Length: 177
Image (cartoon, rainbow, N blue to C red; front, side, top):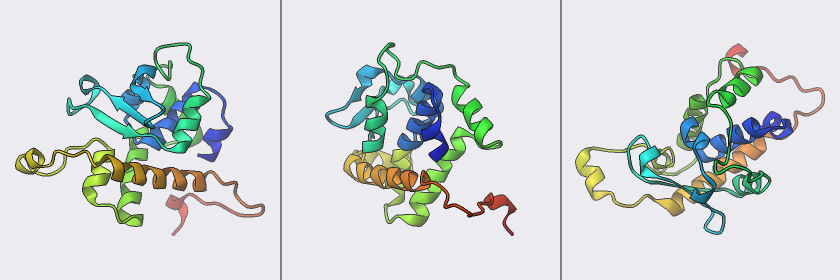
């Protein structure tokens, strides 16, 4: 996240937005300004663009709102870039990582470091949860709980953005044994 903050360009902002919202690459790349409600702090992704064909309301953290406010509105799309721009940027900075892997990191973090129910984290990822019968009875999108979870996720992302202290050695987890 710290490196993304330092990078110029729409691809860096799109990748940061993707991380902050836990949205898929295609959802972010197809996001339109008229789907963003800054007052309600919400992004509504239409059903036709969702894998489950169901509208998805994504709460926007303060950092996501600040990011959006700094973007030019020269196109109806929020991030008018090519479909591989975020992956290319990620591969340049963190070879081997994928955008989808960042969604997985969110899910792990929500499970291991928060007390939010599994269904809240899964709905943040726009995943269908439970059996067909359970889904028929579960009619809420747990928006306010997801808003708090996403604020916690953004705070963790901000913590990750802190500069490494002088003299510290940071090793990739894969190398630590």
